[in-house]
Amino acid sequence: MPKYFLLLLLLFPLLEVIGFILVSQIIGIWPTIILIVFSSVFGAWLAKREGLQAIRLAQMQINQGQMPNQVMLDGLCILFGGLALLIPGFITDILGLLLLIPKTRAVFKALLIKWFSKLVRNGQFVVINRRPF
Image (cartoon, rainbow, N blue to C red; front, side, top):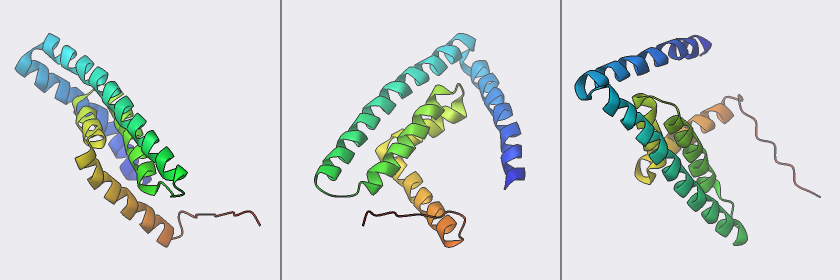
């Protein structure tokens, strides 16, 4: 796993730079810069909107005595989506938008649940539940 992470860490910036170059050759350098800035501003606005909606829903579920499991996963996806949109680059922008749009976020939530379940099953992730007596 660490080998793949290191490889991804090295390849990702290279892919972003190649994306910048390709897009700037197609639409020009200034439109490319404006597009990157616009995507960051739009992403911050969308992340704030979706994040506040998730917080309101979580509060409502807690007030009704329910555990907001799905809303917590939504919040995690929204956090990572917002962070991805703040990082300059087209690949991160696409990933960030996919994490912020509710319909596509469902796919990422399903993958997260599957990944967490696998970690728990393999004993790599332990859940400790301490209840008061």
